[in-house]
Length: 197
Image (cartoon, rainbow, N blue to C red; front, side, top):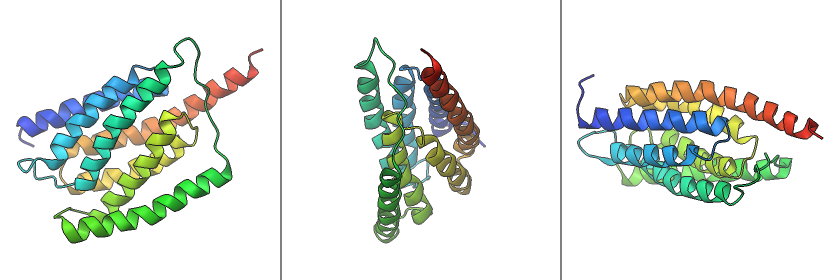
């Protein structure tokens, strides 16, 4: 892998993204600025003709990450003197979220396959749509967002590897492992909150 401008962008984006996830696991508000910068750099990588990655759904997703990062930062800041509680969604909310994803992912995949030169349009669309949902859940501190991320990150490993963006492939391996750790950590944090008088 030759080091060029886009490899540098990918490297910085990956580093910021790792800091984001580690801080998110710790429920630190400082996760959000790292996520915003890492995501903005990801957009540049995914759409730049010179980088030749051509993952347009991912570019849309990473643009959304910038905005959901701003939303999460504002939301978590609004409760500066109190910790925002971890939320548990009902089965109905999960069925709606998953159903929405299963409808929108093939539709986006079809669009990208028909109207762009997108590589892996259906897998790209799956990870994009479900990442939209999981990011919203994450900003709302929904516990099961970690379950979504475990699946999304596992699929993304293959997607990024197929596009020869190996630093992002490595990032997804790290994200996959840290999503499991994050789930365990949030469960532990939640049980400590519940058991405190």
